[in-house]
Length: 319
Image (cartoon, rainbow, N blue to C red):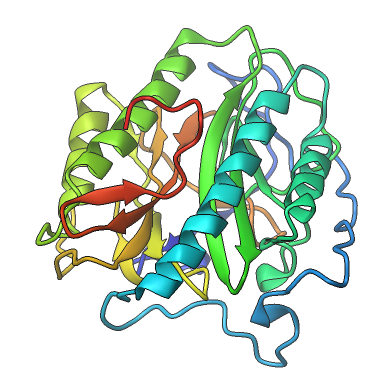
């Protein structure tokens, strides 16, 4: 959720979207248009559910972006396991709920109600002003889409990015969902993105360079003719949603090696081709017009002997 933007980029460098006629649309006959569909206000969270600190602080701290990678103790790791599993269960429920004709606001309602049923808080609500319980990025929206009243059409694909707050820590994961009938090229992109995530996870262990993750993802994407979105990164996670280390998904020279107790997200976005990124006036939604994208995400714990996927879902067999 809310991938940290890479240090070499600033949002001011992303073009503001200008709605214009496109002479040719290859992938999407109904492009996503800014402001076409309404956004329902955030749903209420029961008062007994613990809130993250940024909800009540006058000067909220959303993350720590510099310094050594955080090493968590066993008590914190146990909390992160629980939060990660709630996030994973939420993502599973959301993915299985996707169907033709429902809106992404319908999906927001499903996600919201499941999260609060677990006595957890939907971390997106209030995070830097985000107005909903989940990010839903449809088709050419590559990141941070806000759920709205647009119905899902046949052939749509979407990323569902779930983050929850429970017992003082965040759990973070994302999945892809599809509405039949899918363009086989987009299905291949989705499958390749998941493969890139899995292959990157498999090299995680004590002593491994953080930068190696980007090498693997770049290689998997390139072998299939896709490109890696260089704009956003994964991140350490704990009491704050964003903490060191920064996980870069393309070729990089990020310093440092993994040690037991590190917990971080790997969340690559792959695109059909390299093209421009545009941001809507909501300051969240980032699109690459008529350029399909896909993203999957997991939380990884570095153990004494390798790794543990904290957000592994009950239907996953590839890791």
